Length: 466
Ligand code: PFF
Image (cartoon, rainbow, N blue to C red; front, side, top):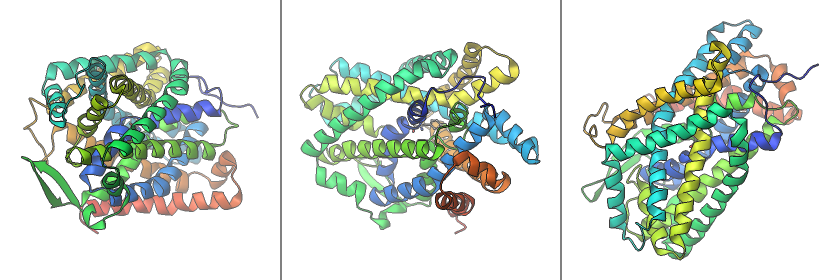
């Protein structure tokens, strides 16, 4: 049998696939979003639910999504159309690919704005702004940044150009190098921050918050209102934990599928998926361990929202020896982590434009990047001029975040699980995965029953039915 490959090229080895997929998975989701939603939803119990979602839903769906990509070897839209026709079901399954493309646009539009914050912080940290700064002064720097549409737009534009550049050149070139060298350095820096936070911060309180489940706190959402903490009952946490499992693993929108389509046939999908999930989870927990001891040591609110890491880490950078260098480097690497994620957000759309519209890669990347850039202006303004315009009590940014992470990605994952578990022939998955019979059965069961049911029940819970 001749080995099939994608017209866009192929990763050179398993290691490269693992690195690229880890590059996609590890990003702002781990270092920016995980700590702040953990803070908002009360800590340990939320973390436990999140870890459960990773293991019981994320991992099995990741294996399924890579598997579809490698069987199809095309952009998710064409892969789904082809695999559906091959199974004798409606080619309308290509809608799963389309939904992924749209979700990717929506996510990248705000992702780029937040990555822009990290660029700005790299600059501020290197130039000494945080040297010896108090928690309040650090908070002011954040406030000034987000209240300036001009600055946000500038950094958003810069980040989007970086993304278009790499996607335009082809995912393989550049990415392989960036991921091999930079991701390990980011992990080391994060480990240094964990060490510092545990030694100098409120270690016991921070770790207790992160790892000691308090189930009473789960259904409470706490926010700070004019200096005092206000907690209200909410049905959201299960959905947010599930949504974040998808977001952080880049699942449910075709990013991992398209990376799977560049995966050589002799590589074990399961082992690769396990490595990606493990790396992603460790980085997120590290980020939590670096941040919460600082939050408590400085009397900050764990539930203070999307600015959390930008209001805590700089305090430490301003105080520790060599902190400005370490901190500057940290934010530079955070930008790289976001960069290796953002390229995977537009790769499904770019691959489609190359395949179906005959565009060159640079043109495809600029078209997609341009659309996301325009959409991103909404997020830029939602932090300042539009901050009072709310729909369902959410700003434009909050709406996008909620819609993508908590609804579109889990729905995408649900349909992937249904397609692989119920529509594709079992033997096709069996031969693609080449697992021992016991392991295959376990995966098959979880994918067919546990994962879809889990997603379904959590959706029902969110709308108040169970
Ligand atoms: N997984 C990325 C992160 O945690 O930052 C974000 C992301 C990338 C989500 C790619 C979805 C995606 F397709």
